[in-house]
Image (cartoon, rainbow, N blue to C red; front, top):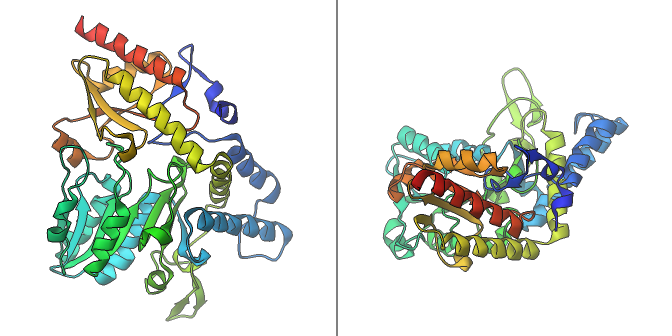
Length: 403
């Protein structure tokens, strides 16, 4: 239905039409995103905020216009709460090395979950070692959901930060973040939500959620690589020190001291990634045109079809909740007797792109009892015929290895 919006889907791989099922890693880009970035470079290229000439004014309006689109997209109260970063990873690191460095002390606790991506685990590990803090983890239950009954014990008066993924990039599990945020706030803890797999798939309302911080990854929601978003409540961001220093984030500078710019620019040092931010704004335009409800319903239909067809194949083990209401279209699985990397290679020969490995979640894979999994993940342009090709390819791989 939407394939014509994505030029890359016209490609053939090994003589076969491209079946792209690696969307949890990065989505393909619609034509309007490509054109928006090309238009900027062809007609408006200039640095922002620093010139009164026409090109600079146009570039500034386009860049700041994208900030307004993000604000509306996630329902932030103030545009100053939207900080552009290089991606979700930098957004999390920004919080760790500003808020975390200032507020985490020896003996404090940081609560994560057993399903975190390395980007929301490793920075907190480093900070905890540096500060003498303790990392704790919300465990998984047998249905691949979080054991919420453990929250009252895990969140204590020493808990300063609860940081968790909104949606698992391995299990597809949609976590009840609003409930967890309320539990954390009752104990006085702050909350960061990693929304890398949520943006562009489900509706995100940061005011309703009550999150203190929320991060987005542009390239996973039909936007370009190299751009992400940190949302933070204004009163928190205002009290955070700069993440990086140099140009653009200053108000005044003399030989011995400097003062900082207002939000959001205090946290956006240096020349901005202007074209990619404009591309992110165009991606939000695309999502809004399609409608998040339509996106979610389409992906749900595709996911349920995949789960049903995979369930018919002997030796397939699927990791993640069985119920569609508890997950999105990210399906990690293994086929008995077929190493995941060999499966991916066989599928690639048939023009089918999936992801294999630990998906930047090694501790979770150890808990699953496997070193790696195959992962198929879906977007608005995937069709039933894509899934038929995937299922046929998996059956062919099993026949090769197990006959």
